[in-house]
Image 1: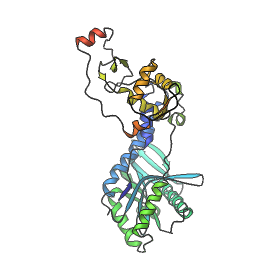
Image 2 (image 1 turned 60 degrees about the vertical axis):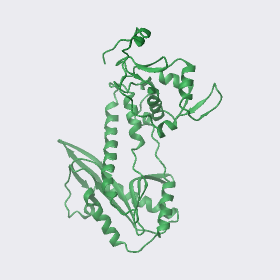
Image 3 (image 1 turned 135 degrees about the vertical axis):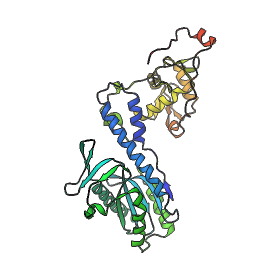
Image 4 (image 1 turned 90 degrees about the horizontal axis):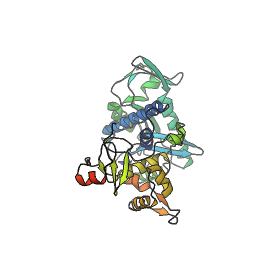
Length: 352
C-alpha cells in the first residue's frame, strides 16, 4: 500500500519557472539546465521503478516515496522507504546512463559517457548513511528495534556496471530494477520475526508521514541569480513570447495574435516558484506589467484567493493556484474579425 505517492519534486517546477524567465543569453543558464535535466532524470527513474513496486502485496508492504526526516539539526532524504512487519528497506534510485564503476575505497562513482569521465558521490555510501540516520531517528522516537536494509537501484537500461560480481560490497547493495522484487523476497524470507503488528505498522507509517519535512528551495539564491535578471510580464502559452497584453478584459498576444482568458494564472504560479506564495496589488502590477490598480484587484479577486489586510494593504495567498493548476490552454484564437481589427488597429504580427 502506498501511503505517500510519488510526485514531481518542487525543484523541477522552480527550475522550469526560472529558465522561462531568464534570457537565453544569461551566463549561468547552462548550469541551471544541467541541474534541471538531472532532477528530471531522477524523477523519471523513480517513476519507472513504480512498475515493480506496484507488484508488491498491498497487505504486506507500505511504501513511502520521497521521505525527508529531520533529527536534531540534520535532515536526510530517502527516495523510497518500504515498511514490512519484519524489516524496513530504503531505496536510493539512480537513473544514469554510461559505463559505471563504483570505487568503494575512495567512495566515488565514476561514469564514462561519450568519451567524457565524471565523478559522482558513492551511492552505496549515501544509501548506508540514510540507513544510519533512519536508525537514529527511530531510536529517538522510541520505535521498536527493527532490521533496516538499504539498496541502490539502477533504473536505466543503458547503464553498464563495470564492477565485478566478486566485489561483495557492491554486489550486496546494488541492483537493477527488474531484480528488485527478488531482493525484497529474500529479505522477507530472511527476517522471520515480526516486529510490528499490522496496526503498529500502519501507526508508524502514519507517524513517518506526519514527520515528513519537505525541503524548501530558493533557486535564485542557489544559482546566484539577481532579481533584476528575472523577466516580468505574461507569457503566451502558444508562442512562448512574453508578449501578452491585457486588452478589453482578455489577454492578447502581440506576437502570434492569440487570445487567452487566464494567461495571468501561469505568470502568478511562476511568481510563487521564484519568490513567495503571497502577493500584493503593487507586486502583482510590477510582475504582470499592468499599471491599473483596479484591473489587478479584479484579476486577483476573481481567483477567490484567501487574503489578509485592508483594501489598500491587502495580501493575497496564491497557494491554491498550485493545488488547483489551470487547465491546458485552448486552441489559439487569432484576432481576425473586423470587430477586433477595428478596435485594435495597432496590432501587427511580429517576428519571433
